[in-house]
Length: 404
Ligand SMILES: [Zn+2]
Image 1 (cartoon, helix red, strand yellow):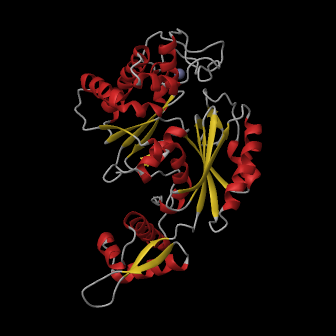
Image 2 (cartoon, protein in one colour):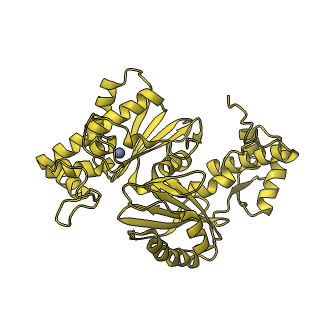
Image 3 (cartoon, protein in one colour):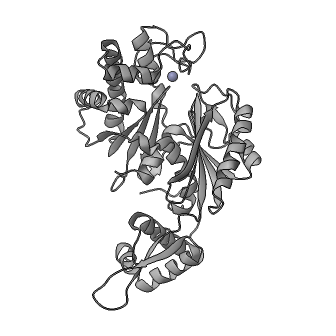
């Protein structure tokens, strides 16, 4: 049971029940579309007349449309309802240290257009590069009205100041990306850490979301991030810093990390770690520069994956080593949080037939709680880092209302 927060609450008004029921109906339509009013009443437990009032309002506001008629043996044929996909469009921006992807999604979180650009090394330049591309995407689909921009970042956003405060792999200082981008585009901007965005993507749009209350997303890229959904809610902490398991120490007095500490999980289990294992380099941080940007001649993570697939022993060893260290951190999450599911996101999932069994073996040996946690790879085609940004904006319409 959630305790009432007496420093931040909203009392129930006569609008509250209406708002809750409306959101329930809207979500039922999203999950079961096309669906009849009778089925909505059955799924929600609301009176048929209440469902009719709510759906008429949703149709009037253009959130929902009536489609084909259903077939029944006798009586009036029901008209099926579905979301009006073009009611709201959202721009998603996925910032990674080298490349940024942007997409324009409809209300069903399907991308109708997508492109990418190099990530500039300073944030002002980045905004200048990004803004015209966002405008182009919106202009390409004038029938969809764009409501806002969701941005996923390889760093943490301070909840109070909305500044990017911790982005060791990106190298940007503390910047108010939200206000800057809002002023440049005239659209509302929501920022979120990439791992949190992945957790939201999996929770809102993933194939395994039914019945899941607690979910952890582990993003493996230049670093490691974790996003936690606990009891149906994204855990952010008081400041927005919840989930930095990538920077917990797993090797005492280990290699130096870009965060300034030593022996962090991400130094041993990220793509950068695989490159280091493969090249035999002993330093995680080269000349003070991010190991995520190796010299041109050095292999990139994709090369190592490809070589491992071809049976190159050095590459296989590097991937196995990363998998073992991934397992150590995942075991910690299983033991400490016992989530229903842990989803692993990143290029490493392409080698899941090799990596998955190693992770599961380490978890089995280290976690004695026998939590029924499933550890699964995400489908890279689902593009969770980008898709999660859509949930950031859509939550406003589909999320549970906060009262009391
Ligand atoms: Zn660290």
